Image 1 (cartoon, rainbow, N blue to C red):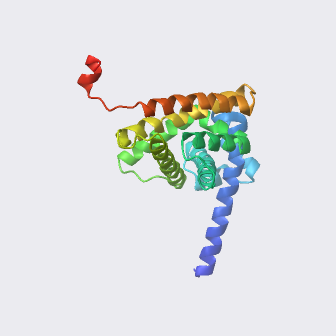
Image 2: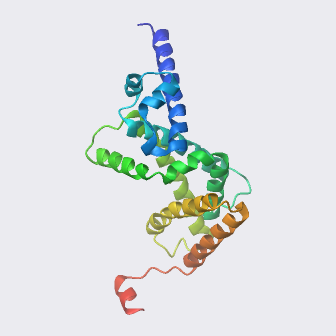
Image 3: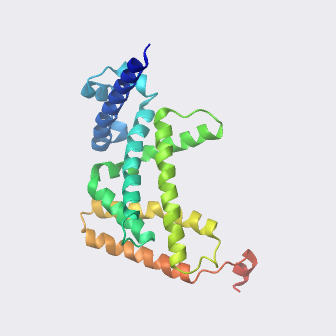
Length: 232
């Protein structure tokens, strides 16, 4: 087979796969994971169910492919936000970026609340622990997830530096703890979306969270377990 034919076939394969993902995204965001049927996705996309499974190992694999595209968009928004010349390189920037993401992709933001996501990610982690190869969809998801984690680490490092406590804290411990705040930020934003509250109100609630964190960092002091127990 000539190299030009190989490139053409690969291009066609990519186009079909992308078309299936776009169609599946509409089903997952409109109907949720449980009500989405692969045969209906295939019918809407103009392919057979067998064709879908030529590109995706399972419904879970199709779902993670859709979420991977959503993570890619979130990573792009975070990255673009950090490139702005007047951006405050701290946790508030993370909140602003997530608000921008929800505004631009309100339907896809719902995917973060899909209960199946945690189970699919857990399955992927177990595969990595046992050295089992990931699917194409899982590889794409992991790539964008790691990019987001790297951006978050940089933002949190900036927050520590801005608080003037970089020499007083264990950076790794603080980064690990503050990284978990991503879910809190998402919850505050999505709660605002569900409650139809104004963006100004959501920003006010995020500001409360960030002020608490800033205050805690400025008074942060590394203590041993003995000191904590004795109150010293």
